[in-house]
Image (cartoon, rainbow, N blue to C red; front, top):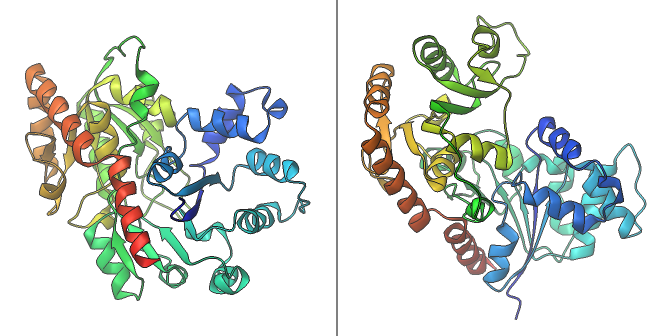
Length: 370
């Protein structure tokens, strides 16, 4: 018996993701919605990709929609004989999907998937919705998030910041979607190509990544660090240059989905750093992605790290620029240590920090609220 119906809206992670996808599926226009959605999912672009599968395994009915992938959404609308305007297709299709599926719970991975004016009147417009849940990993949009019955966020510090602003926030750490490992089962082992790698935003163009930017610049200058960097042009003058321009021989384009996991596996050590906004806490996605696939992780630390991983055993940590260089040198010179950390880190993640574990938490908490 279905316990509740949950409709989750996720977003694509930048235009590069969609561009890559459409290049790989040149005949996408000939696919129906289910085929195209399955092809998108198979590349592991979606945040916690197997969310719907995990929630259904717990007895719920779950629907997962990527609301801003135009080709997917318009396929859905056409197959459901829904007429939309080209000017406002995104909002109109989202609202029709809510009407169509009549969920007990709407779970929005991005609060701005609909205009705030609609969110304020959400349950009046859709009286069958019993809970509106959102997820946000950065402390902002407090007024908008106050429209949600519950907001999940990824560190204790951000929980506190939200609660002080009147947002009903709870801690839900990020996790590793263990079905990622299925994509590599039976394949040839990925060869290690790089001693150390970093994947993500370099900090260029972002106001809350100053430490990350400066440390990465020094590492590119003094080590063989390899980077797959996302960099944007800032909307205000900055005293920086893109690291991709400063170190073109060491920096490649950003990577996503399965390609990102392959790059992680091609590195002897994966470097991780949180944003300045994380303050004294840790809990970003890379903690769980890197350990989940079984690579040695070197990461900045925080007061809550003992809740997640044992330092020096599951992951290697640093608290300063100087310590980062010392720990990296130690790891690069000790293959046995790298292997031990990678093995223990993966064991901890697959035991404690899987998507299955997080979905059980969500299921229990939402069931109690319902």
